[in-house]
Image (cartoon, rainbow, N blue to C red):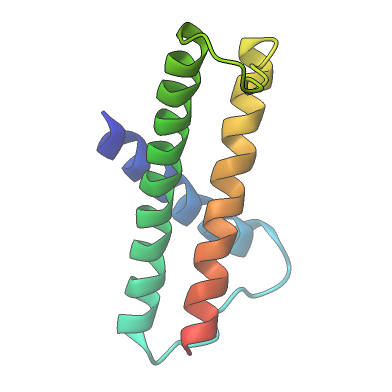
Length: 109
C-alpha cells in the first residue's frame, strides 16, 4: 500500500508538471534537457522521498502511540487534536522531505 501511495504521488507530480506546461503561457523546460539520466534520477528521488516521509510519519505515529501507553515522568509528545491536524502535520512533513530531496539533487549537480 505504501508503494502504491508513493507511486500515485509521483504520478500526480509528473501530471501537475505537464499541466503547468500546457495551461500556462510560459514554456517549462528542465534545466538539464540533455541529461535524461539526471531527469530520471530527480523523478526517482521524489519517489524515494515520498516513501521516506511516509515511513517517518508511520514511525512517529507508532512511537507516539507507545509513549502514550507508557507511564513516565518525561514530558509526553503533544498529540494532534483532530484527524485534520494530523493530516496537516503529515502533509507538511512530506512537503519538507520532498523539498529536501530537491535541494540535495540540485546540490549534487
